[in-house]
Length: 459
Image 1 (tube, one colour):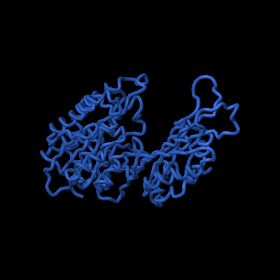
Image 2 (cartoon, helix red, strand yellow):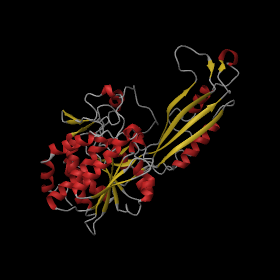
Image 3 (cartoon, one colour):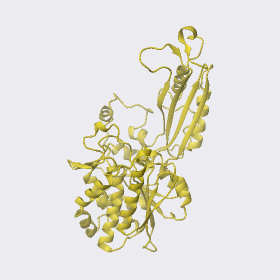
Image 4 (tube, rainbow, N blue to C red):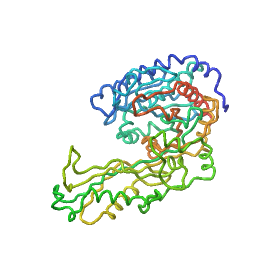
């Protein structure tokens, strides 16, 4: 197929920019915050709105129930002999706090300086709308689609997709297809079209260290009773060496080294380590020595302490030896690391390095594997041509340090190859005040998706 988008498709997409913005504003106006029960009715209303819009496009659509928030589902299977594609996105959004930091109301999407600001503009309502616009463009210019589509728009991605795997298992036969396409990622930079080919996995732990049966007077018992906070700090300090390498036996099992080509690709990307560190408010980057910063961010596993607490935290002083301390840990996984193996290994190691005089309890949860798709996969090559058609430049291939649970679920439960073709920007402030979607990315993404459907028809 061509690297240039069909002229009729391009003309249709280019002539409807204002309407696309209006439609995104209408979707953003629904406060579909999945984390807060008081918005449950709005979440359901948003699912129903997406179902209605798919029906208006010409898809057969309906609300599919889960044990939590519903799924908006649509399908069109009028291209016999052509590939069947699942398009995944999510309609739920993050809470907006702190509200006072928003320049404009989060659910009144506002356009200024070539960007549209509002909660869900890029994560992920705007990127789902790119697919709706592309579907419409095909029907409007040709009366048909070049591929079969099954559209799954989730309502719980922002709370960890707790019911998504059960949904996939229940509807596995109905969802049978050849490929999953996900538009919930970002490019490397505004002038660097990109395709994400890997996502890190994720596991969590909560560690509790118990000492005395109750808080003790530090004057009476200091020096003879082990302090649980100190013990926990010692344990956390034992997780890594001075070079940033995790010391847990077996932690790196399944971690793959970059190829020479992959390393060269990373080195070719514009990344000023000192400038990026300064922008984050730190004096310098840390982590495994001898590794490129982008390698550490995308292709190396991490083990981090996300929170630690215990003892007195109120005003003034309270001289005690606390009875317990807690910490939350998480690991981002890469390559072929097995989440269950990692959870067990870290829990065992923490108990092994605990000092005498305390007892340790470790609870673990989450089970998200890392996912990657080869850049040589025909669908990824098709997506690369589509990105070039939409943005006028061939894309680079990147990873992302984050985790999208449903991507792992598609991989593990439905055994699907996946194309991650998002067009957000690193400065979009997702999950933060003043989330935005740069309109040139939005409009370019619509053309790229329209071209993608043509490209995938030929794989």
